[in-house]
Image (tube, rainbow, N blue to C red; front, side):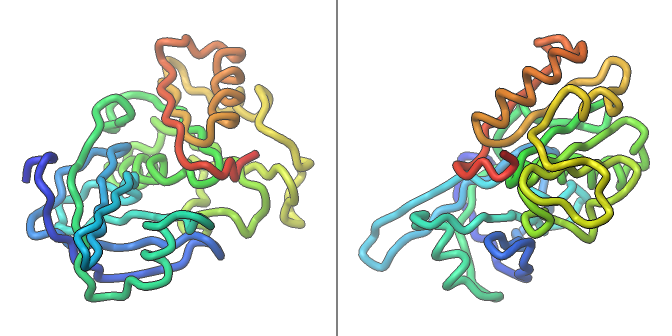
Length: 235
């Protein structure tokens, strides 16, 4: 299917990630051809013909199936996110268009340092899942910054030797790191030789993470940034 064509997608599963985020599993009419880091545009149409759309990164790894996962944060004034959270149920049909994007993608073919803040973890989770699926986890290191343990997406699946979580407001009892924002000291132990950095989060988080990556030696031309969501949940 062309990424310029709207197509139906059936909701086949819903799951809560945090008190304000849900993952929607959608089934297409054909196998998904997305790459880790790409996104789809989701469109809602009201009975009077009014339409609204928003881009959502794919959280699932490409595995040849016709199903994809989109994780959506419920925003207080978000007309699409509130409808998805409050009204959509399994069996509903939505409209999507994609996959879209060629800059912020990782194909499990080179070392990668993945750095996300809050909801910015979504496209990075697709990359981590793909690395695990392809059995190339030695190529990837993931650092996620969230405010509290309750704000962590994919909390049951994310942990592993490839992933690190830091907290900025409150930490779990087992944490040895005091709550604070991302720093060079957090990134430096995770940097693989010749790694490309993928940074995703709010603008303040993306700026701070980019500065930290440059400070530890990642060349600016090997840093790819996607500014994602308005909440800055990793700050």
